[in-house]
Image (cartoon, rainbow, N blue to C red; front, side, top):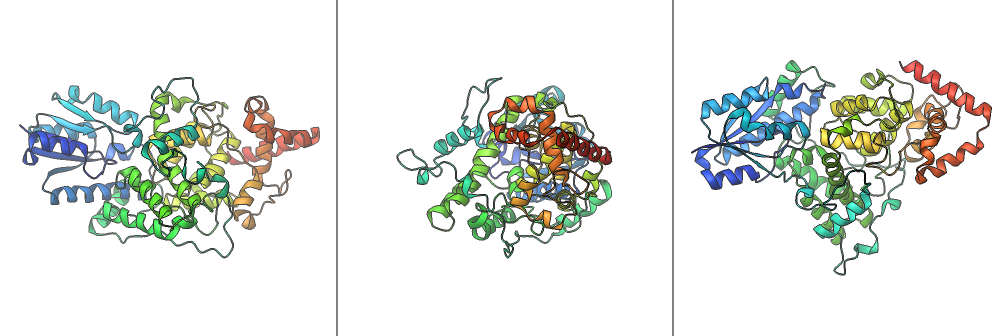
Length: 505
């Protein structure tokens, strides 16, 4: 008997469970490993060309590693996934197919229906790329109940014994060092650049194919990302030694000059399966215990990896596909063209959008407090914002973007994921970054032609949504500012906001 192991393009894990099971049951010589580059999938959105290069090159390198390990690999470049699967089964006469669960709804549903499609038995194994597959902090996951990230994160820390004392208390008797992680980047700071890699023959070939076949965002030129586990591990080692020590203090900082600052930029590799989240969390913990990185940096990084990433994936599956339809604010403005060009006078928005269109990357604070903040204040339709994030970022997948964008960024779910809407005026943007220094708008002006649009959009939003905001205790400070606005100021704020938003159409 023979079996096919179908490995998806974002499941490039070491010791793939489907391979392990198939080897035990059928023997290596009776296994066919199937990998499919699906043009149908690659055209679902207008993806960044560098993202397509990353995925396809990483898949091809993974396939070569499997061949070197003695596996029979059938690597197909196909127009459509279903047809490629059917042709493979016909040609290889496989009598069973073994898979690991897809991380997204559509892929999982296809796997669940695959026996009917292929007319052979199918085995679907749990996804090992997420820690919530091993431990459920909230096993009930009830609907209409709010689950707080901080509670989720603490349960994960305890269960996986990360930054914990033997008595059950957290290291240094604090769970969260976020208040130590809000420094602005000094003018003389020179953060080291992340590790980069010269494309090899496989990657060059992929770059040529992507450039010819896909009219995506950006360009393949300048591609220098890791495309194998070995390279991804080098990137992780470089982060831990060079940037982790300063990561915490400047985690929320934004820079006109440096796109990465002290961030890890490891998310594309984790999401592909090239790096293991628990291994990364343990390595960060080791840096603390060995005195190579301070607690605020280590805890901040670990919170992102085993806290927020896992919480987002858990919420994605708890809330289900209906999350995509949420629109708490009834926002219906189309996504402005500037999001595809970066052509806007607001320097922070111009810089971050241009950076993303060129590289497929900006760090999480710029995503939240520049891009999503603007979209929320401007009343842009949530589905269009989500599709923009899915299209442009190299680390984007539905499971991570849908809850992050609609829940955290836009509060379109009304508070299922985040405890408050993250909105801010120019004051916050200037406090945490240097974009305002190069802007033609005045960050201090609230109204008028020279006023920063973030200011009048912010107050216009609070005026418009005052009733909903009053139901959230965490917004009380923002609402107090309304007392200082007289009737004339309110009229002018609304007028400026309306005129600006019309100019974007």
